[in-house]
Image (cartoon, rainbow, N blue to C red):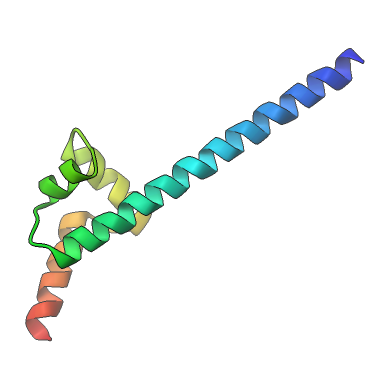
Length: 87
């Protein structure tokens, strides 16, 4: 009986951790999609976008953006500016 309770408790902790991780990843993805829109559609600096999204330090925002999008926000913004100039 004690073993069953222990295993059930462990399974609940693992499920809870996975669920929280999934929620955290989802929210970070949504924030980064919003950042993409801000960087693409508006004449905002990376620091301003980081501030809008609630990051205390733009370096934290840049790291999060790169981990989700695969490129730094400043590089992303520059590529969009070049694309608009060509189009």
